[in-house]
Length: 521
Image (tube, rainbow, N blue to C red; front, side, top):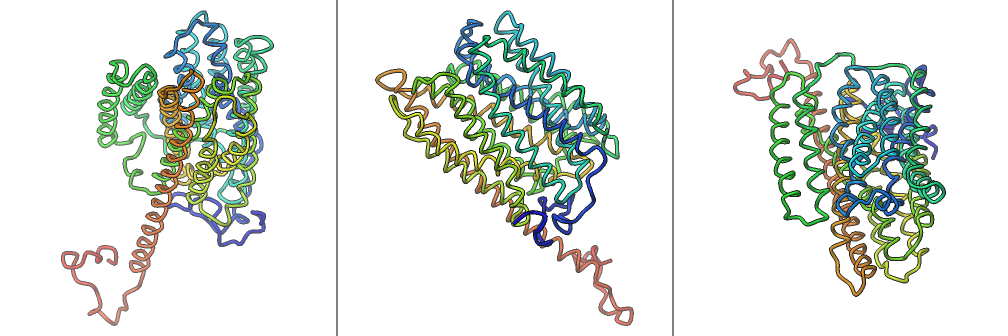
């Protein structure tokens, strides 16, 4: 059934105290002025950030050869951008809410131009990695502010459902196009050309920002600098520790950053409990909807993005396919993902965003698990059915997470909500890449290709299990959210019940003898 013709009893967005479901997908206010320009600009910016994110996936060997990079550096080539994203997404969300979402988005687009140009011109590995990390910082600004801009210009209802479906499609589209684009340009002009191309493509996105209406939180909050510094440093240390794990888990390069991450993140938690206006309100962690959004995003990064970031390298090593042929794997998976992100708006009238996210993870688990059995000399085409199924799940999941992100926080903190959700996604992706590499390279076999095949199969099963665990956790949190809503609704009804003036004896006793009297009085 089309969303516009759906029964009005269904909620188009995840119901929450902050974003009530409203009367239905066919109701609600019309889109705000500038909504089309906002969706176009944010969609293009999101597409480019995901293209930059996935660029090294099919060109890792060429880039490493050109820069004379070692094994650990190659892991950082994949995780550098997630480090920048994970460290600053939440901070950028708060900056966007306070200083202006359009301003933050535009600054991110300009930085994306400069950062990709830096990687393109890098004389060595260190400068290249610096550019990759700065691409993550730029992407943090674009993603955190972008989803907030969409929420501000598209009111809850069918307009927001459609807009978030388009946004989810650009996520899948960027992941699909990026590896193909990178593989083709690398084969024709060399690996540097793909970064020069990304820099040029980001220029019109920065220019289009001028047509986007500005928005910010109604109440301007003081920037939580202590929270920003401790969260950024703690997240970066956590990702750095996992990123170094390819050389062994018990090395100081792994243990020291992980220990530092625990300490610094504990300081962050203490800071957020003490400051008057925290960047991430600790009370949000008591919201099952907020937790469901975080679990879904973390699992997506850990089990989906992490696996597919290293999948091309595994396929090339086991089956001996070239970069362009391998990039077609991303076209199947992410192309289907983009399509189903758009089609998933038809699910909105029939299920909540949390249930939709769990469904997406379950389908992804089935698709990724079916990749098991890859072996030396095996068929390249055998992977395509599983990738298509995984793409269906990923598309449904991406659209659901976008709905959950804006529904789990107050409307005036929508950019912070998207920042928190995307932080979980990219922390998960950075950790997922490192774990996938560690699992895939830890197996043994009669040849390097056979060993990699065994490790890849282990990674397929592990990622599928993680998807199922994430789906189960989301369903449990959804059940808890409904239970809390029922209790809250009953308490509100009791509090609103009038007490007859002619029956003073029915007035409840003092608060000391009746815990519920404070609500009635």
